Length: 219
Image 1: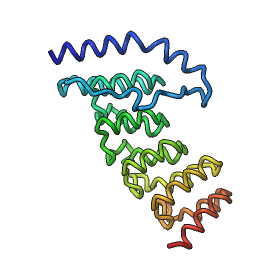
Image 2: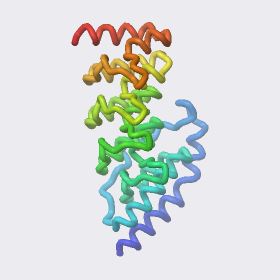
Image 3: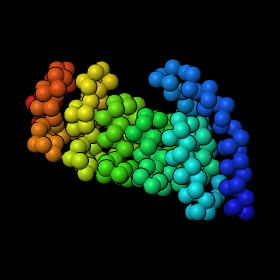
């Protein structure tokens, strides 16, 4: 029975995906469609075996890598394991966070995503989301309790990457505001011994530097 349910889920996903995700590539927002919200798409997962959930989870990761978030959402609703990682340690949750698929992040969290899980760089979902200033994803991950000051294997925290690998534009400024408001430590240093403020000044991120100085003054 479990195998039959999983097979039906895969057939439904395969049959419904191509047209919608192809059309999505011609929409605004950087070529990425405004995906349905998790509450619109998430339904109680059918009972599937662990092996089937793993297969569905890997298919969901692959779908995201093809820029097919609707497929990933359907697979999650069908019982995909949102924590299973592919050969380069990408899970649906981690990859969605890194690439800014907010609806998929919400759906993964609703289906048991491990907020402490880490990618191949030893980083949480919040770190690459902050580097790329995926503001809505950052808000979601902060609310979900992803560790704010986790340090990855390259010596970066989320705040460190938002500044040291960001460009200081309006989105990165908002990312920095959100992280600081959530309690990110502004005194943290990178693997080269440079502080967040030093990186902001070195990179000419004047507005970001002001935000960091204000946070340091409040410590």
